[in-house]
Amino acid sequence: MSRLTDKYQSYAHFKGISFDEASYTSTPTKTGALQLSGNSVIMTDGNFTADGNNTATLQTGVLPNQKYYQFEFNNTVSPQKNARLYYGSFASGNAGGIDDVRRVMWDYTPFDRVCGFWLKMPSNITSSSSVIAAVRFLTNGTSAMITVGAAKSPNGLPAINFTHSTAELSTGGAVVQWYESYTDTGSNVIPIQWDKWYFIAVRKSINETNSPSVGDPATGTIEYKHYINGQLVGTFTRTSWTKRSINAIVFGNNNAVTNGKIGISSWFLSDWDQIGTGGLADIFRYGSPFYSTMKYYDGDSWEWTNSQRVYYDNAWQDVYANRFDGTNWVPM
Image 1 (cartoon, rainbow, N blue to C red):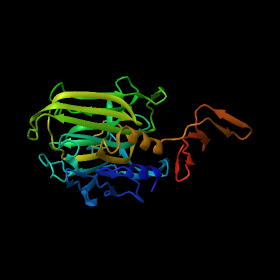
Image 2: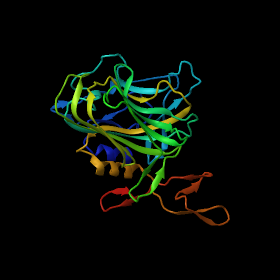
Image 3: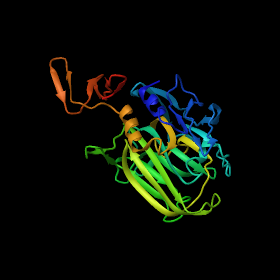
Image 4: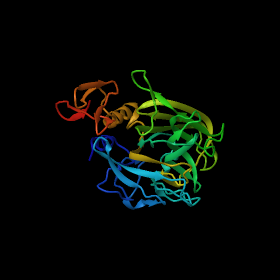
C-alpha cells in the first residue's frame, strides 16, 4: 500500500476506505476497528453499491504511489444519474442499527467525531454556484445532512464547498460555505485551484443537555469545524438542532448540474481524540507534494522556476520526496 494509506491507517478509526485497490471494485477494502460505546461498528465488503450512467474508474499517479477513484459527471446524460458509490439505502426511514457506521456521525452523544478524505478538483466547473458532491451523508432517503464537494463559488472562483442542511440545523437555517482559499502554517493565503488535490475534514462536536428521540429538537451545543489541508478554515455553532439518523454515505453525485471529473481517496471516520489537529496535519504531510525551487534542462541550458515543481512531459509536475529519519522513510 502507499505511504498515505499506511499513515491514515496508523490512527485508530471506526472505518476507512483507502480507494487504493489493485483494480476498480464496488466493494473496496475497509479498514478500522475502533469501537463505539462497546458496540462494534461494522462495515462489510458487501455493503457498497456502484451505479450511474458514467462508471467510476481507478486512477493512479497523482497522490504519492496512491490510487484513487475517479467519478465522471456529464449533464448531457439523461436521466442525469452519474457515477456514485454508496453504502446504506436510499429508502426513507432506513436508519440502520446500533452497529451501523452510517449513524456514527450523528447518534450516540456526547461525542467529538471527524470525517476526512482527499478530493481532486475537476479541471473546471463552468457554472457558478454549482457543486459536484464528493461525500454526502443522507437522511430520509435522499436529503443530504452534509455535502462536501468541488465547486465554482458565486464569485466565479474554484472553491471547496461545505453545505449543512436545514433539516438538522433547526435554528438559523442551513449553512453554506464557499472556501476559495485557506491559510497555511506560514500565514500564506493559498488559493484553491482546479485540477489539484486537497485534504478535507469535517469535525462534529456535541455537548447535549438532553437526549431526545431521533427527529426531535435537541438542546445543548452542536459545533462543526471545517478543515482544508489540515488547516481550520471555518467554525459554526448552534444551540438547538434536530437529531437525524443517516440512511446512506454516498461518494460521488447522482444529479449533476455540470460536467467534470473528481477524484476521491483515503476516506476515514474516527473520534477526534484519536486523530485531532496533529493527526490531520500528519496525514496531510504524507499526501502533499514536497515544494522546493527546482531546475530543469530545456535542451540547451539549465533553467529555474519559482513554480516549485519539476518540469517534464511538457508540463510542471508536483514532486513527492522522502527522507530517512533513522527508522523509516518519511515525507520531507
